[in-house]
Image (cartoon, rainbow, N blue to C red; front, top):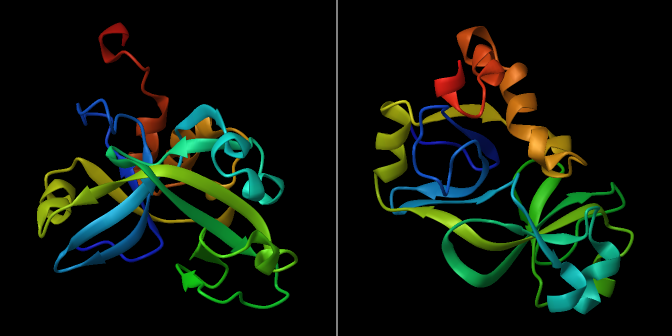
Length: 183
């Protein structure tokens, strides 16, 4: 099952890879050549202003880089929410209000056009069929993304919050302790 662009991958509580344990990944692209996304709930400690000073004022709180994934950690990607005042140039839509913006363009082009912005260092990537296999094996649950997921003021609690709103038994995963052996 190929995830749609703009959807969420919720890591299963049984996913053992420490790079993705208890993470939410926003799917930025997915097709026959592979999939690409960014981890939403791993804030780093580096302020955006230290690496992209001109973007600092537009960045949503907390104004730090987020660890987008284990691939190309020196590359920066930005996801933003439209303010409703128009669509900026070089906008790559993920949904009606969310999209990827071009950090190579002057930030002034986005003033008034976006209402929220997060910057991610690195990304998560999967080869052809790899993510589909991981979803089929139960490592990931698919869910629609909600705008506030990307700009949560509690990224550490986001995995549980998103699980809680899922239908059926998937919601129960939100109650599992960090260390299942304590259960």
